[in-house]
View (spheres, rainbow, N blue to C red):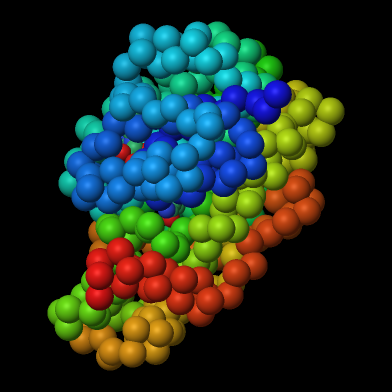
Length: 339
Ligand SMILES: NC(=O)c1ccc[n+]([C@@H]2O[C@H](COP(=O)([O-])OP(=O)(O)OC[C@H]3O[C@@H](n4cnc5c(N)ncnc54)[C@H](O)[C@@H]3O)[C@@H](O)[C@H]2O)c1
């Protein structure tokens, strides 16, 4: 019988795609999401409708639930006894964390702690959680390696993600819970987040409104296509962290080790913001109206992943070509918004 997987943030961008893939692969999936209004709730509901209606999976159960509601979480764990937990629910985004810091502490710290407690209480065999490339702050050295110091976050969002890594490590050390933290680098694709650059740019280019180009375009990102992120998570389901395969980074500084690993998940290519916009313009067939502005508070100038650790672990690294990925994204965008 296929393992039961508990996914948080199932109505979110990455959670939705992960749920669809796992259902297709025959896993029994139990999803939760509080459907908060951090962005358009209708988009989240549409994603859920796709899972329920289009594919009509034999085992998919959804609960509208807060991570902060520990009792309800425990009831779901007790009922289903999942073996694998994937935590993708979080308040996400650097700018939102400046506007609404309380929500970030509540979901990303208190909520995350509740999930860890459930993992402990119900003997979870594989706990995978979303961290973020934002933990690297304004790291000077590129590409970013998991060995680099991540003690200097430049947003509360990044600080909560780094806290998650520390909390997960502690629970792994104390209770031997196999845990894997994934530092995602700017994920994009169909059903993407409306608060992220690809969606904001597409919306404004189609409606011929100016797009805000921060730091006068002197920014670069490692853009990672959603299918590659899902493939990574899928492969990790059968490759949990183990005590035998000690974390090479921890073993350099400590005699202790625990089944906790952290991996970069990025495409390994640095894309300049103006090149990104130009590719989008070509695919859409409309020139963007650009409004050049200074650097945004909490933003970082560049991100780029060193992906050798994840490659060694699962034999796969994200590799989707940006133009191909953006074409898939724009095709979806036009269909979804009837353009
Ligand atoms: N998309 C990216 O580029 C990216 C990059 C780095 C890290 N991440 C991380 O990956 C994860 C998934 O990101 P995403 O892009 O799918 O974001 P998303 O906002 O689309 O999905 C997160 C989902 O979690 C839900 N949620 C938030 N707080 C909750 C709570 N307290 N209880 C229950 N549900 C809650 C939201 O309603 C949302 O549907 C997040 O942890 C995010 O921080 C994403």
